[in-house]
Length: 229
Image 1 (cartoon, helix red, strand yellow):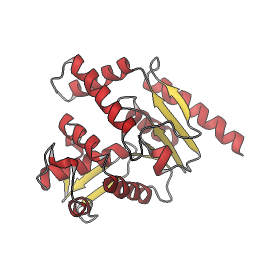
Image 2 (cartoon, helix red, strand yellow):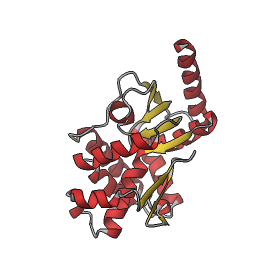
Image 3 (cartoon, one colour):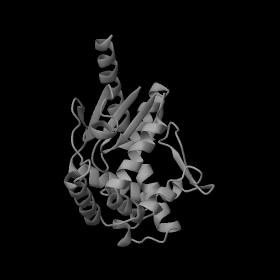
């Protein structure tokens, strides 16, 4: 069974998906981690930069995602990625990688490859999947879908806190600009733009902490499952 959680940047998707998976005893999949992993590999092993990564070649994309080299493991915490035997997961929250991931996410070939990868990863498993098009495109037939959001100010604050934990020096104004920039790119891209998936339950977490948000979503999940029996 699949539960999807979509939403904009810094809405809390990753944290909530992990906590929800732990509560259910399931695994979780962060689709964004796959995009960041691919961006990292292209920039560090195939010599792309922030300009050239806008047009990655299909050959380089396929080789970057070669299952003999690019290994994704599902866990309760969103997954881990190894490339050529090296765990690259700790490097994927870097702001430079995050920006590059948002750029390649507009590439149709990239999205097609990663949609197939996600569907293969969750086959015959119970997984909470989070991203920006998991309920609208990747798993459009998922029985339970959530759309998680929060005010732009709250999301900018959360994004800044994440970067501060990683010792990044970023001004609050820059955080708000980065959030606005990412929102615009996600909502206006031609391929799988960020939308509220059909049938999704909309959750505004602006005034809730992660534990409260998960409990509320779990109760909605339980209620929907009871009604479907």
